[in-house]
Length: 144
Picture 1 (cartoon, rainbow, N blue to C red):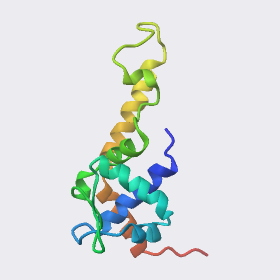
Picture 2: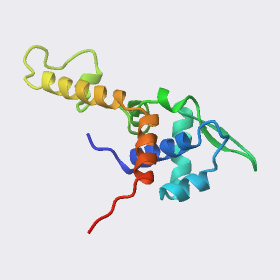
Picture 3: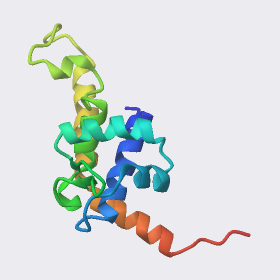
């Protein structure tokens, strides 16, 4: 599985919104500046995440974006599936019927990869990622 720039930027935007959860809407220009994301591209990503039910958007001068639910209730799998599509590494896992039933030697391997990927991404929440980001900012690292 390879996460595109769209997936990376989308997760960064969700983490930024998690930092401000409960404080009201955050404008896309602020998210873009803080996370280093081109604003026009971010707007497209935010639209996708709004349609997926991950964020809410409010128009107007006091408008912006907020998480649609608490960051602890948004899993990394939710974001990646909304932005990238299926987590399945091979198309035949997405259909109920295999084209080579009983003779496909690789389907079980790909199913195991899919389960493992889904398990990991479902275990990680946006809240946990935001906490890790806060912790790394709070404790600067020194290099010699």
